[in-house]
Length: 162
Length: 194
Image 1 (cartoon, helix red, strand yellow):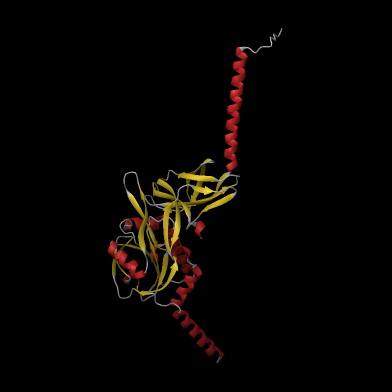
Image 2 (tube, one colour; image 1 turned 135 degrees about the vertical axis):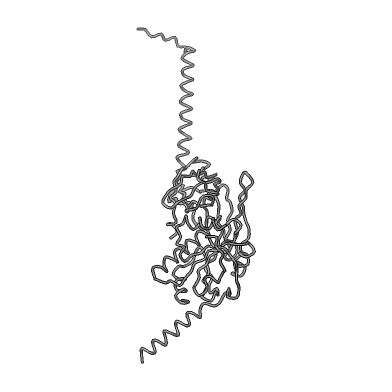
C-alpha cells in the first residue's frame, strides 16, 4: 500500500477538517454552558406546604441555597396543583397590621440562602385544583435566570410551625 | 398561723393576677346575629357567655398569617386538653363573609382536621361582621388582589394579626399577636381568669 503525499490538502479532507472543528466547537460551547449552569448550584431544601381545600389558597415554604459564585434570580414558579402560582411576601404595616403582595424577580446572592417562611416570602398557590391533605406532597418547579428549572417536592402539613 | 398567712398571701397574689388583665372592650351588652360553619344561626357573644373565649379574626383566602393564627388556636386547644381545662370555647370569625360562606369555613376547618367540639367558625352579613371586628378593635381593609384570566377576582386583606381572650362576661381582657402568640402566656392568662 502506498500513501500519496502531494503537500496539498484535498477539498474532501478540508471539508472533513472544518466539520470536525465545528463539532468540537459546538461540543465545547454546550459543555461550557452546562458548566456555567452547574456553577450556580441552586438547591431547594425543607419544602413544605400548608394543607388547604380545593378552590382555596395555600403557601409553599422552603429554603433556597445558592452555593455558586454568582447571584441568581428567581423568575417564576410553576405547579400543577393550582390555577395560578405567584411569589408573595407578607409584610407588616404599622403596629400589628399584616398585608401581602406579589414579588417579582427575587435575587439570591452568591453563597447565600433565602428562606421562604411563614410571615415572609412564600409561593402562593391560588385556587387549588385539588385538596392538599396532610401527609401527601405536591410537586413544583422554580425557574431561575441562570440555573434554569429546579424541580422539588413539598410535603403537606403544619408540623413546621410548631 | 403560718398556713393562714400563706393562704392569705396566695389569695392576694391570685386576685392581683386577675386584676392584671384590664377590660379592653365589653361585648356584654351587644348581640350579633351570625352563622356558623354548619349554616346554623348563632347569636354572638350569647352562645359562649359563661365561658372563656379564645377568638381570632380571619379570611380563608389568606395563605400565610391567618392559618398561622388558626394553627396557634389549635395548639392552645391541645394544651388545654392536656391540662384538663374545659371551660374555654374557640371562635374564628371571618371578616370576608362574601367569600367565606359556611361551606367554605367548614372545608377550611375540615382539611386541617380541627376539633370543632368547642370551636366555632362564624360568618354572616358583611355589615354584622364589620360591626363585630370594629367593636373588637380589629381592622381589615382590602389590599392587593389577584385577577384570573376569565376576569374573576380575589382580594387580600391588610388586617390586624390578632387573637383575643374574652372572659365569661363577654369582656375582651387581652390582645395577642395572632401569628406569634406565646402559648404559655395565654395558658397562664386563661388559668388566671378561669
